[in-house]
Length: 148
Picture 1 (tube, one colour):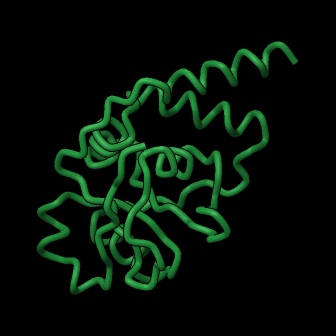
Picture 2 (picture 1 turned 30 degrees about the vertical axis):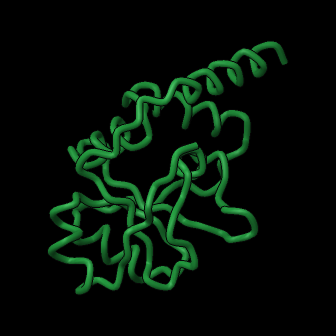
Picture 3 (picture 1 turned 120 degrees about the horizontal axis):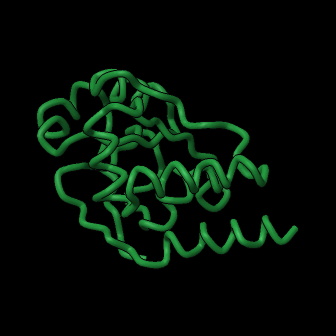
C-alpha cells in the first residue's frame, strides 16, 4: 500500500509543474465532438489514461506511435512531460488499474485525422501546418487548449 501511495505522489508531482507551450501542435476533435476547448489537465488525464471522460462525455484519444516526432512534440510541448515522465505516468495508471482502454495508435498523420474524423467523441493532434491544409478534408476541428 505504501508503494501505491508513493507512486501516486510521483504521478501527482509530475503534473504539478506545467511546462506547457502549445508550439506547433493542434489538438483536433471530430467535427461532431460537442466541445470546443479543453484544459491542459483534462488533456493530460485523457492521454495518460487517468480518465476516459470529460464530465459525462466519453472521449477516446488517438495517439501516434512511440517513434513519431509529432508524438514527442505533443508530449513535451502540449502535455508538458518528457517522454520518460509520460511513460512512467502511463505505467503507474495501468498498475493501479485506472486505465482499461489504451489510446488507439495512428501510424501516420493522415491516419490520425481519419481516425478522429470517423469517431464522434475522439481527440487527436497534428501539426498546425497539417491542420491548416487538411482539416476540411477530414471533418475535424481544432480544440482550443485552455490554462488549468
